[in-house]
Amino acid sequence: MGRKEARLGQALQVTIPSYFRCPISLDVMRSPVSLCTGVTYDRASIQRWLDSGNTTCPATMLPLPSTDLVPNLTLQRLIRLWSSAYASCSPSSAVGDAPVAGEILRDLRFSASGGDPVPPLRKLAEFLSSDEEDEFDKNNLVNAGGCASVVVSVLHGDAVSEAKEAAITVLTVILTLDSIEESNKKITISELTSDVRRSVSALTRVLRGGSSLESRVDAARVLDSIIAAADAECKFRISEEELVQELVRLIGPSDEKATAMDQRAIEAGLACMVGLSASRRIMPLMARAGAVAAVTRVLGAESAAATVEKALRVMEAASGCAEGRASICEDGAAAAMAVVRRMVKAGKAGAEAAVAVLWRVCHRFRDRRAVEAVAAAEGVVTKLLLLMQSGCSPAARQMAADLLKIFRVSSKSCITGYDTKTTHIMPF
Image (spheres, rainbow, N blue to C red):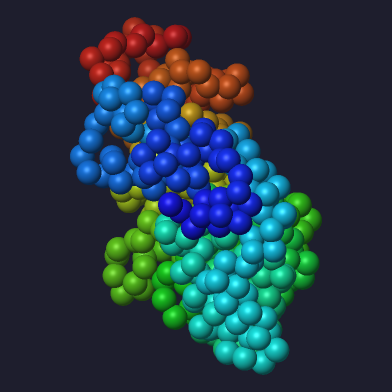
């Protein structure tokens, strides 16, 4: 029997609704998820079933065409409401009263008054990350006793770098874990943005001199959450040159002497860049810091489609300013060529971002270097035709048509479809 179930069942003498129990473990579900068969299980239990090589639904024994696990948020909310209602009736079930959680909270409060914050912060990160700990206890701990406030105070304070990195690890766990409720994530972001300049300054220092790549990646992930909550004016105010330079450095080679690129760092850095680029005034600064060259390297490497899409969105933002377009068109328009190569393998949003880049540098501003380089690229006309034949937006279709007029071939010409045997006839 699970710890939460035992506590509620013994202390309150209540009957647990059957649909709150996992069909495998028979415990109250901590993280209910549904299979394609429609049956809901606790995530840990069904994941163990699938990891053991089983390909059927445990309850129905039907074969599983998909093993995707979809969070059952409605049931999760009902379980939490039920738990909170009964837990409030018993002193033994009070918020933050689980033995481990209570100890961590006490240590955190002590560290705020001059103790060493590193051990309790590491213990907190381990507790929140553990699949064995109760999600109710995790959320109660984050929400109780000003936990988020204490962690952010370590980040803002005069603590040593090790303590700041430990605080950032905790913040990353809170802001990225599915098991942490959105309301608790909002509380944490609110603490970070209460003094946004101090938060960004501390994160920038870790981005610049973190003890490991992991700590720098975590700093970028926390920064991404702050950026997502900021309006355009706030984004502009926090985008100092040093911060932008560190984000550019983060998506470069993981080792300055090597050519390897770390995908976690790329993903975190690009996410921040995409968020910042929503403010047009930031893009010239990013272009001067070398963002276009860094993103070009990402487009030239093997990356997931989602990563390529983010890279193309940053390139689209760069093409909207003179400094960005100059960077895209320099060095033989290498950046424009990279955009052409990846434009049909980045999903709909990525493809539309790519055609917007090409339209600006080749059609609207008619940069000769870009026009010549793109015209010589293999399959550019085919890719533009494929985009037009897909379900792209009217604006993207019009931009593709404008580009085809520049790169058109004889009206009698035929071209072989991209990666297919299909023949497409030029529309003019």
